[in-house]
Length: 355
Ligand SMILES: *Cc1c(COP(=O)(O)O)cnc(C)c1O
Image (cartoon, rainbow, N blue to C red; front, side, top):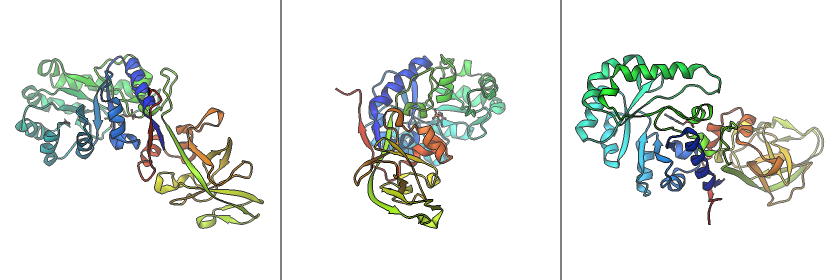
């Protein structure tokens, strides 16, 4: 897997420019499988980046251990026993339960953000229950407050409803009085893509830092390529099956290449019989079940020798394989595809903006 850190930096700049506000760059899931340490070092000194978003104390601690001293916001709830560790490592928690807010204050005066659930029904204080936090918020004003969209499509009307609930929730806990300078952040990648400038103070993109979704309104640079070598070649006769379970049978004589990637690398089993790869400029079909370490492709129409490179994602020209297209081959989301590459696949970093 090749990761272009310069492209991530340019994407961050463009997203911040479009949103008109600085970013919390979401680096959870090891930066969506691309490697949080490398990405954080690339973005740490960017003016457009306010801080980084993580999902667990451990993710934050790894960044601290590797010299990242930027603001870290844990956007996921933690259990009370994790709060002392968060305080020690300088990780800002997202809180929504009165007893947790009290406990955090008992540890010191460090910042915390109020998580408000406006309809995702996943985490945070329910938007219609903020009156019950009014008093504690007045005594322990948060640094920030946020909610998270449920929409996965551009024209989803849910956003308007969620935003009106967010406003009501802030009014119900009298945020204007408790924390007049509270930092509000709501927009994720899709939010930034579909509306600009942001009406809030920060935006929280994850996926779009890494080049998806592209909506035409911001040009995002492609960030990653996934490649594997051809490590074996054979000819099979009509009627012979290929790989486990024999779910693919050669309709006639075919030349097959075995490439050095499998589901232990994050190249999904659901790509079996469905995905395409590019070898020497020709699109070739994955045939049979993707195994743990090897995948077979039909190279009957391609020039192909041992050691040749198969492109699984990325590449150049009209033979490019877009992340979203590849995810669709396996009927999975681009998010799930990316985070899976955190398994065995070696990551090679470059910087296309370098000297
Ligand atoms: C993951 C996440 C984001 C980023 O979402 P993208 O769709 O990747 O931009 C933003 N906010 C929260 C709370 C998240 O968990």
